[in-house]
Image 1 (cartoon, rainbow, N blue to C red):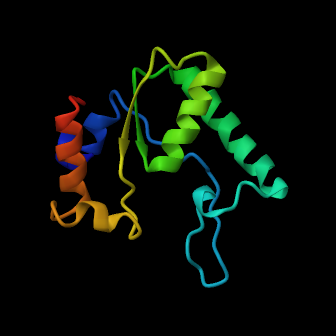
Image 2 (cartoon, rainbow, N blue to C red; image 1 turned 60 degrees about the vertical axis):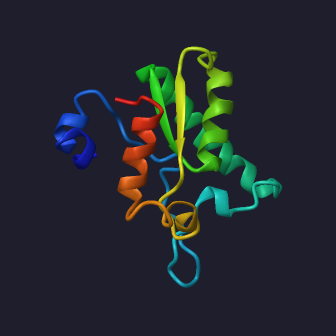
Length: 129
């Protein structure tokens, strides 16, 4: 945000950042576990996904954004489902960026020196502010 909007404070005049899942989950080795890492097809994990969807729906309904930038395929899918659920799918533009995780690094690292450079180039290419 600092590179694209001069400062985080400048960005927060018109933007908002949130995690799809506001919980911190770690595996036995202390590595971050995301909802996308979990097998949501397991019935016991569906309530977690549903709670995260409800949280996201509340934020989207409250703020009514014109543009949403998602990080990764999983959050893009969840956002699409939530926008349908809230009836806002036609009024919110969604842009997907690759996630800055090590798993996605190979998709942008050959072209860009950093994830920030990739994100800035992609946002410029699609006409984001």
